[in-house]
Length: 137
Image (cartoon, rainbow, N blue to C red; front, side, top):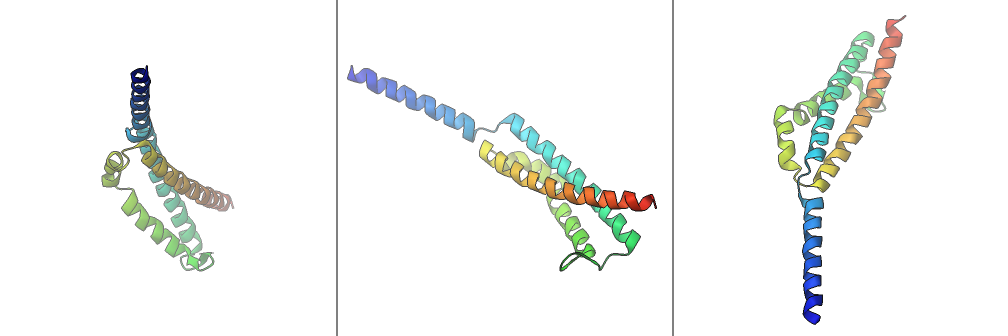
């Protein structure tokens, strides 16, 4: 009887180990594809936001005007271009499957991309609205 209890315990541990490994240490295909799609969305939105920002700066010659206290439009555009050249290259895209090997790592990367997307989207919407409003004048 005692052997049966030990056997059931061992089987339970094996099942728990397999479930843990599958949930946390496997590379979920769907989640990785979603991450890659989000990365591409961020890349496209960054390009569009840089374009809107450049249009705004050129229209108002606002290169050295403050966008935020202590931060000029020129600095913001230069910083966006710098980050874009580092984070949104084909090489970085190809690294995603290698860097995000588990579900928890994919979730962390997705959170980072979502934060970036929301910030870019907010800036894009404001700039786009300003540029469209001024085009109608």
